[in-house]
Length: 201
Image (tube, rainbow, N blue to C red; front, side, top):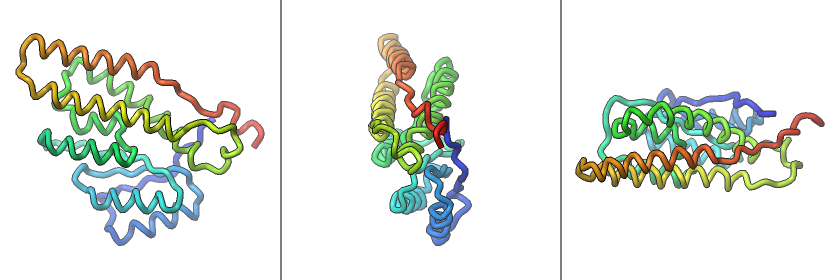
């Protein structure tokens, strides 16, 4: 049984001074997970929100908004590093940042995997922070999250390296192989959640 996230904060619509108040309300409501949405350039608010939520033991799912402006590879690399360090490098966020350099044939497959990944990401974060699941035999929820983040980071950084190469047949084949391997591995991810949760609640 899953527990739905009940709160979302649009950081683009918040002043930095209001974020602590938002977090206080979330803590009082006892929500284990909150969704943050933001533009990719709003890093000070993102950092403040993540720190504040972590301080009250509330997990965050950060979802970057789509932007028309294409970022430079160096900018994308910095953002990917930031997202990795904060355990927020979801495939959906990677798509928002790198969609312009992804061959169109792969985008539908990646979007499908991103949707599935987000579902399980929320479940794992819920299991981390929800006191109602603490009695369930320990599973490495944080390890599941970080495994996904690490794989997405490695995929994104190698993608940036590959697209910087000349568009020779050999390099194009490398790009295709990179995507095929990544998608295949994504489909092998073990989706784990306490299936019996709720039956005895």
